[in-house]
Length: 241
Image 1 (cartoon, rainbow, N blue to C red):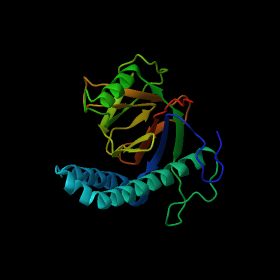
Image 2 (image 1 turned 60 degrees about the vertical axis):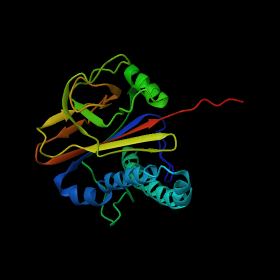
Image 3 (image 1 turned 90 degrees about the vertical axis):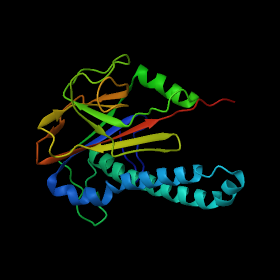
Image 4 (image 1 turned 30 degrees about the vertical axis):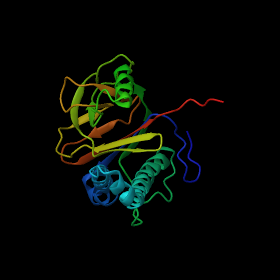
């Protein structure tokens, strides 16, 4: 796994995670949390466009909608890419030049990059979403303490300790991105597994699970650290000739 220039070399379903200290909150406020705001604005733009039911009205406002939607999409993509590429650089021991926008050093306590396991229930749900048989998507991220190897038939995490609504859930091209910062007030825990799910409590459906196979894990200390996880799901289309 190597990073060349500004290109991220990890391809596939990937979890990128970082353990931040409370001293880093100002940088997260400036460069990470605004992603959530932009995603919500883009949702509102779509709802506004879809509120026009008369075709002539939609034709009239479509150029404005398309322009604004594209601008927001590009901005969201650039912000996520900027943040995740920094995590990738550190994962590959490229600390020189890895900085926040204000020029200060980008220095989480630890960085983790792991591939995931897509679960059978998640594949079933994706097909139902595509066919219009459900509108329930995976908006929550669970965090757990187990290091048990994932299997496609499991229903959730092996030892869940925390679950919360993702800070953002967004699609761009053939990629679905979601991310969440674990609040510093969450009890002290060594997080070793993560998963995406559709409900704030069980019963729920999980679509992916990741375990951190080797230390360092996300060693959260209540009141002092702020773990953050990003997950990427690639939707791959088979090419035909």
